[in-house]
Amino acid sequence: MKKTYKLFYGLLSVLMVLAFSCKKNDIGGTGAPTIARVRTLTKNDTTYNVVKRITLDSSITQNVTTSVGFDSTVTSGGLGNQYAIIGTNLLTTQSVTINGVSVYVNPALLTDHSIIFTIPSLTSTATQVPFGPNQTNKIVVVTKYGTVSFNFPITQPPPIITSFAPQVANPGDTVTITGQVFNDVTAVRFDKIPATIIGKSTATQVQVLVPQGVSSNLIYVTTPGGTAVTTTTFGFKYVVYTESLTAGWGGQGSGGYDGYNSTRVYNDTSHPQSGTYDISCVFSNNYGALQLGYGGATPVNVSTLGLTSIKLSVYAGAGFSAGQKIQVYLNGTYQISVQATLTPGAYTDIVIPLSSLGNPTTITEIDVQDAGVAPPCTIYVDNLGFI
Image (cartoon, rainbow, N blue to C red; front, side, top):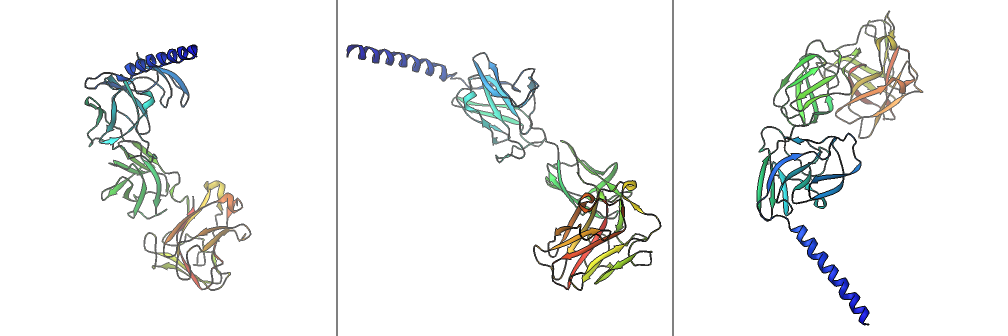
């Protein structure tokens, strides 16, 4: 029994020593905090997302997963990155804010000389840290014993383009480009052709006038954070219909043919997506279609023209309800068709790869047919061609 007591008191003494030792190490400085610099996390390191042993200051060595590839003092930060604040009296840190927004601090890596913090990315669910020149540009660290601020601007990320509408338009028409981080847009161009920005752009949208000379072009948006480019082209490599049918197409005295089981008006003004006219097509029975046959002297050669997809915009009119579809096929090969769901009372922009339509080598006919919608029903087609 005496041996048991001796063992118990021996262990208790060791635990007390450890407790006092840990407490002493965890207290840290009791003075006001200071910040000497902000730095990236690892030194001379080009590997990412790998756990490594690092020393942030003379008092602690830790395992961390790095997200940046070099070590240096930085004077500004970017969204989605981790940094270390180097200073003194930091162990009792209660909060770190940047431009008034709280950021995450890893408590396991907190020391009296360093704080590791993370700036949320654009896709993070955390509150976004404001960026750009009109902010306070301050890191503020609050500890148990005081507050310190440090100049640390957050740079603007590059813009992101998610969509644009309409898919094609005439010179002078308005195109709306939608995306993220459009703050302070400085320029928009269609490949190398500059466009005029109209109105006041927002962080998610900018409107421009289509410049002269645009046919099939990528759209570029430039901000102080960089330049973004669309993944699809605006316009066409080969136009079938914008304000009228291209020569050789359809039954308008151009050598082509059109039909069938439908009533078609090629200069309709009911629902133009851009410009003045659209194609109105009323399907009179279940086999009705907007059929456009080509009769021109020069074949529409897919390889020569570099065509990869058909692009068209379709407005669902009378007779269509939510979830109903049309189908598109080429060269009369109805067995190989692609369906698209329409939105009643609105245009739907449709892009179909030619690889999904049998990989034709030439284009001789375009068919747009309702897919199970009870007749009579009406569609309006605008901006039809190939990209």
